[in-house]
Length: 139
Image: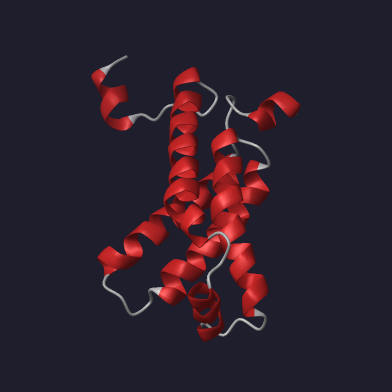
């Protein structure tokens, strides 16, 4: 590999290195979302349900369940690389609401985590799970 490739080139997504990178990002992101965020919201507490209602959602109980399932189950599905694109969509919606609505008035450092999860989910929505995933094995 030349210095020019190292400095300016990207790895093709069909290469083993790119697919390994996707695997690492997918597993770490999914497990972080599920274990550090989803577990604490499952089942949704009254406070979480009230917070969802305060954001203006019409059926706060339903949307609180969807958000907590998106983080917990969606995190595990993302880590496995199973139903990656629909899962990434649900995570992106949930993290978009968290980052752009729930934390809209907070300092960037507070909303940053939700926005990072949002950006990663959007990337997996477009890229897919990669070669090292259950999606690829099922396909």
